Image 1 (cartoon, rainbow, N blue to C red):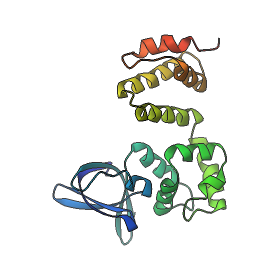
Image 2 (image 1 turned 90 degrees about the vertical axis):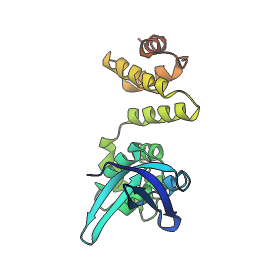
Image 3 (image 1 turned 45 degrees about the vertical axis):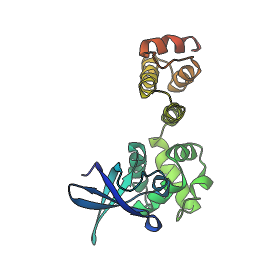
Length: 206
């Protein structure tokens, strides 16, 4: 299995959402979502795409993602009956990973049906098959981590927050309460897990 490909972005074909990445003297044609297409660096820049290899009777096709999160969701989507790789890529083009999680957990078939080639019945089937595989706590945690990165918070602080949430759940608190407490705590970039825990515990309901 090819987990990811790292190399030089040679060229792209926006109409087909196809990029070519060269590594080791070989150019790999990889299909990506329209969302990722807008986030690509310039030609000649180094890029890493997490991949899924589809084996077909008439050949092989690589699908690529800028994050492991999207790669994981893609694998879950193609596990839903009636949704193939191109349909799954269309969903990830129309909805971010966060939006897709919340749409599934909120039974929002209308939001999912906005993706190209996905009708209302398919959207309902997707929700039915994925709802038990997705957790609300994971969705909030992912959103929290992204918010930290978008506001320029250090990656180390984000990791420490996640560890603090895990520690609180290990102490018996629910994941949702733990997440809420960490988000409400006044934190600084230099704080470690223990300090974050102390700050978060002040916001826990006993």
